[in-house]
Amino acid sequence: MTELIQQDIYPSMLISEDQGDEKIEPVKLGQRLKEIRKSFDLTLEEVSKKTGLARSTLSKIENEQISPTFQVMQKLTSGLQIDIPQLFAPPKQVRATGRRDITRNEEGKPHPTSTYEHELLATQLSNKKMMPFKSLVRSRDFADYSDWIRHDGEEFLLVLSGKITFFSEFYEPVNLNEGDSVYYDANMGHMLISISEKDALILWITAS
Image (cartoon, rainbow, N blue to C red):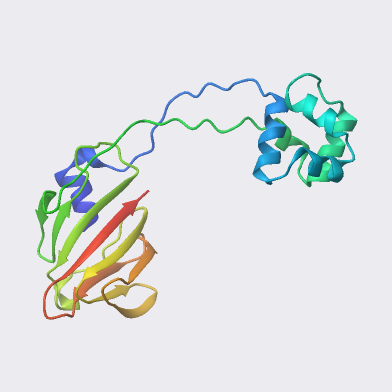
């Protein structure tokens, strides 16, 4: 199912991870301590009580006015219950790429198969880390499939309308109604059939 979409029809839509060199900034202990304190939702006064260090000392460390001695770092890690390496871990760089793609209702790219009628979403973006698409489940019988469907990654399925039976290699078949969802390892064999009067409509999201 999804392997056909990825490999045969839209090779530019293959799920991949962006790669690139990341610049590592020098670690600022004061900034790092402040980040840790805020992540624990603690005030300077509360950290002072936990570590036995004066509030003024903590403030000077956070503002890079003084550098903590090893003894001070031991008090910090002991009082905050963290490891010393955590004080030196550089803050994660959050980089906004500005990527965005809007797909209007029923304006995705169609991709019909013998068992599904897929509508691919967000097709203007390449190298996505996830691939969303809507599908009408045409299949009505387990025998419509020649073998289990398997592919790399993990998959999320949400029933938008109708009712389906979700078959998987290691579990008993389960019926899913409108609003029900399932998250599963896509390397595990799986397949769907519609069991409602009309073909079920589902949202699929495949991620690496």
